[in-house]
Image 1: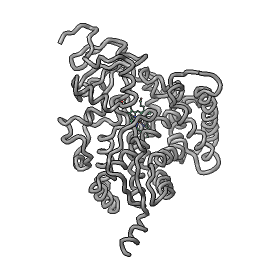
Image 2: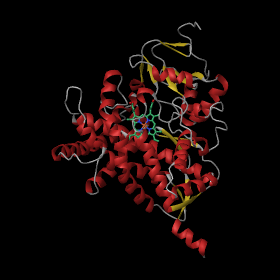
Image 3: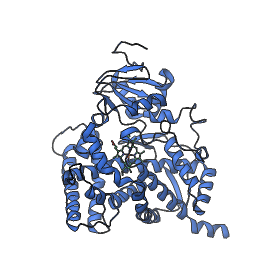
Amino acid sequence: MSLPSTALPPGPSEPVAIQTLRWLTRPIPFMEANRRRFGTRYTTRMLGQAPFVSLADPADVKELFAEPPDVLHPGEGGSVLKPVMGRYSVLVLDEDAHLEQRKLMLPAFHGEKMAALTGLLEEVAERAVAGWPRDEEIALHPHLQAVTLEVILRAVFGLDEGSRLDEMRTVFTEYLEVGTHPMVLMERDLGPGSPWRRFTRVRTRARGLLVTQIRERRTAGEDDRDDILQMLLAARHDDGTPMSDEEITDELMTLLVAGHETTASSLSFACNDLVRNPDVLARLREAVDAGEDEYLDATITEALRRRPVLSISQPRLVVKPIEIGGWRYEPGVALTAAIYLIHHDPEIYPEPYRFQPERWLGVRPGTFTWLPFGGGRRRCLGASFAQLEMRVVLQALLRQTTLSGPRTPERTARRHITVTPERGARVTLRARARERELAAA
Ligand code: HEM
């Protein structure tokens, strides 16, 4: 197909402000409405941003993920996160600089490293679940956020229990809260008392604590630890030099921001879908009791399909003209994989809105049809870590409690960078021992 170079796939003609508002407030209905009207390839326009083309055809996504690094710049597309993560963050870099950081970080997430972390994650999860309220309806999301933060502090930053862990928990909770404020992401300093000022204060403290942790570990030279910090300390650039304090700090910040909210929200949706599907819940409990992983893994795969907490991949900014699916895109346009839409395409997933782990029994997720972690050379570095964490938290929850909750689905709400269940995943937990007592009485 030969097209004028300025033509972009069709999309909504509403004013930019309206499109921005719809995207910010109700992203999923906005995406679905666009697919209904324009098909699997459409252009939207957001305030202050490049025209945005969403690709919801796996064939287009395959081409998108295969494009060379000097043609598409996802790092530039995600540059709003630079103040929060730092200039060396793997998420905000492109081309050689991106590859260099990614190569330094990859070994930390290899299978055997994840296996070595399992015991620690189980310990954190079992202890956290034991402390959650019983016999009253609660929003699970804040508790899941606390457990995913604890996992990062212990398994990524490598903190042992003690006063430093307690201090870091407080500081990083504040950092995460203020760091994703829209005024911070826009780098707007509105004077004393403003979110930006509060952010820069807490950032100095948070980074200072991390640098102390890094330096102490460098001096101690402990190499028998399994945490991610230890792997970063051991990593070497191609010229043999270690990563600097600033590089490690930036990457630890990146892992915190990329790995905390995403995993907590995914678990929240999984729990919300489980209480709404008692048959699945019962089968899952049996599998967990029997120590069988297949149904548990299928449940996690399905939860990540049905509720991808990042509904699009990181936007890739076009820096050299490219052609994808017969359309030519010029520099200045951003392209993204419409993860949510692909996961809800009835041609790919029959009855796509049903939560049905059975669809994954004996089936491997497709590289371009199951995309909760994006893909290509920018695929989520923490994908195995996140799935392991989901597994141990769900196991702890099912071993210790029975879950029940409202059957009505919670609407999807935007929360910082992810989407979450609007009411925080309402559930009632009952101790399983108590449940057995009641049944026997
Ligand atoms: C269920 C939880 C998670 C989900 C759904 C998720 C999803 C994603 C997605 C969609 C991307 C962008 C990929 C692309 O645009 O192609 C990404 C990137 C990334 N994620 Fe995750 N993530 C999760 C958990 C984690 C965890 C636990 C960590 C680390 C501990 C992590 C670290 C990263 C990093 C470092 C990147 C940037 C990779 C790069 O640009 O090279 N994520 N994640």
